[in-house]
Length: 304
Image (spheres, one colour):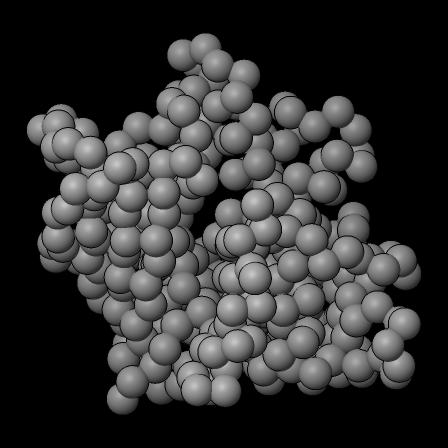
């Protein structure tokens, strides 16, 4: 059973499970866990690990259209090294400062491999939280930023060499789109972050909203680093759409509001498709790209 199957099992008892964060009396709260074996390639510095781990939780806050306020983290390893620990905390502090939040501490533990669990909190705006289930046919499908940076980073980690590894660490230190999420809160009818990849996120948003999605391949903004590692256009789209871990925002916005909200998004907002009525029957794909079925493929915990 993978992560998505597990969420479906829990949905009966936890009806709000499945959104990027929980909302309690206007406070947004979310938690994540990352492991050295699955999340931090060889060469990842502890500074990058601290930034990325806490940033992942801050991205969930952003996806709810909330302003981030604070984060904590558990740091666990098979032993404590002063330099590694302090660099991890420095990364956590810096990513919080990048989104006007504060890193306020955490917990230490021993574990067989380097593992971190992070929690972030924030506050919803007057617009209220933005969930995944409000998209309506006729709306624009939009994304923030550029896609594929984590895929490019992994390729650079794998290639080795000091310069490549330094560049890879830089690519792994994304800026959580908190300011963009707040800017979108008034306009977006549905929103989520893209930790599982653009294609899988489209399927998740479409399923939650009970709609279909038509994606335009050439409209997807691809990070320049992908050009350094992709062999051709097919691989370029593969890395941008299916790899995941870019932590950008995917959202549905009414067409008349796209231009005005685009101007308010610091990372930029790109229209990449449209929301359509849910296809009839079991055969038609819920999500297409240029008219062809877009595979529901991306990163999912428990898929091996």
